[in-house]
Length: 639
Image 1: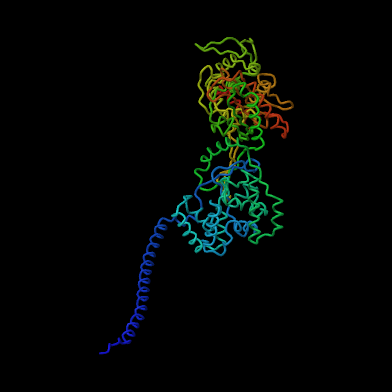
Image 2 (image 1 turned 45 degrees about the vertical axis):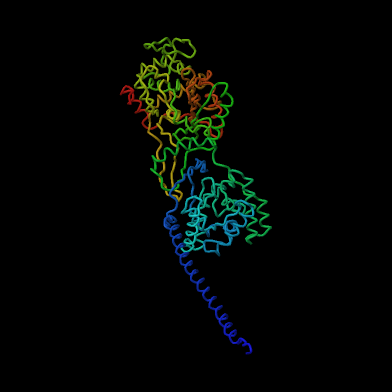
């Protein structure tokens, strides 16, 4: 039989089956991809939601934006109204955007966030651009944070660098964009951002660096301030003016690139760079500011706002005091073994005009003008002789300079000699120790102590025979203050450095009224004391302090073994006290009050008084002066 051939129909049936299988496979694959994509999307969404919740659960309280900062800063103004120093973080008054120069706003936008008015708080393109620039440079050369992100970071977040903190920054930036307009965000930013030197806000920065209001900033100044935002400490003009100006030129170039400024305008501004206002006060003024800060709570309690403190400090006198003390150390410090010194300058009403608390504030913040207690030596004697006058003695009363013994203690004169009969005026002039002790014993030690306290000495004084020679320790500020009644007509004063305290917004918290504690020296006694102390300066142990053509008085003081040397002197315009010694009590090399302290006093006062007219001392005719004199005598000199 012939061989049967296979029917081609069988082939045709298998081919359609294969063709139908391909669409089914693709459909199955598509279903699987769709399924797993949905699963991944679902779980990815859940994970993202959980991650978002994890980032957001401890977001800071957004009400902080309305409350502002809680830390406080203090700006100190001198008696002339100029800033002499700051403490803490200084925040300027709020300035509205429309009050800011357009070139300032443009400088900030061109440098910090050119797409500010178009993004939603986060700028993806900016982030990518910064990432690419940093990748190419191999280091961080560009930041991707928008102005809104910077505001969120500055107000709500800590400086911590972490993915969590960055995520919170992004969330808060988006939230801010939903709550505030672009202009409101920019206003908040410029009033909160840090500009270096403890200064926050554009208003404080304008005052700090240029001494002017925000509205008065020119283009060069605006560019310099905008340039600070990237790195305030690095570009601060008070630290490196050349670097700050170079940074300002970069800001001007940014403004040209952004279309805010022409090339000619940038060149013109670059040729007239910003000039920074000279820093108010020298470094030594910190002793004075420490003293003022310590007393602030007594006047206003604990501050809850940024403060402006108007002080009594005279910047000219402060700088002069620092210069003269530095010159004294340079001249005699090493050779005479003088390690430290201090100076206090008062107006006769007790206003502290200048204060030097030590040789170097950087090395020691201990204020020797206010905190140290040392033996004043013969600088204490005016209180002894005033007590004697109030007990009926006069400058012409005669006393015998002769040996005197109290048990195992015997006062000795610096000269080692005895002068015999001398008047009280001569005894004070020549600083005769034996006579001072005899006068103290005759007037009464407790009365001498009462007199010293009445005039302004606050330290405890021991009623020993050595009281008259300054054996009890006192401070320079209190001793200088106690001389002020001799200069002002016999009125007690309180040393003070604060005239007014107000908030940065202008609310007055404290203002000084009154001048002190009233009349404490009677007219006749005041005139006699001034006569005696003028003689002591003119022809006695203090003659190195003479001021030709000026009325001046004062007294030297030297403690045992040359451990302390003082000169406290006064004119009708100023009362100035100076101390030299060593913190550890080591003796100096024969430094007496009539030497280095008196010379330094003369050098300072001759220049300090140059702009002031020469006048006589008040004669003590204040109301009630004669009555006080009669009362003192009626009560035996007690107060």
